[in-house]
Image (cartoon, rainbow, N blue to C red; front, side):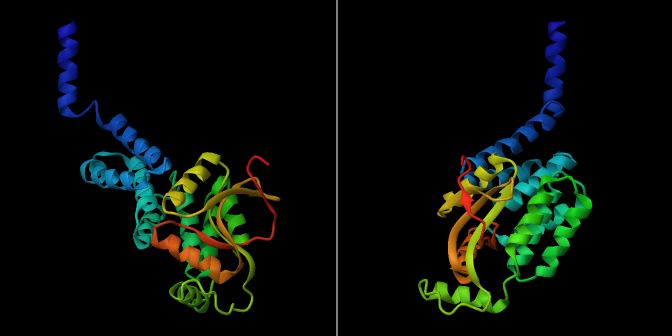
Length: 256
């Protein structure tokens, strides 16, 4: 009997039946933990290797997880947007699609397309009414205010080139403004986002605000939008997602 068992497991190991399902799921989970611990460069390199070796072997859910991870870890914002769009189009109702819609809404708003941002948030309301992401998206859209104009974005880039000189503020740009990387019901997700941005050299805080049950991940506090936009542009160059928000509500520490 012992010899039969050894023989069967040897055949299964050679044929690949034993390894793929659990091993590959474990690999992606390990990559997520690696990224959450702040080792994003290492996680990015390992994901590239995994993609080449394993992607064709895994099932539908693990492909979605891989797309979500690649979008979060890439240093190319355009590639991230393409992967978020793939999740929305190819995997409606999937476990990562609601989060992908929120990222697309935030990107559209940052690029000055407030109407498209509203379209993505409306899709969340329609298709994911019970998702905690939907609540976060509604709150984010309220706090974000009007999408920046092309002129405002140009001023922000110009101020960066002038070594931080803020220049004249565009009308309607009085703060306070912050760059918000997300608002989460799960503290571990907020801490993971903070770790990514901290590794990239940003001074990140976790706060709660009046009237919201969510934990907000934010950078800076600026009297004018241009200052926050400068930080946002730096964030985008690092391949990180965020949005400029205007929020007058007092902040308190998570333990407060």
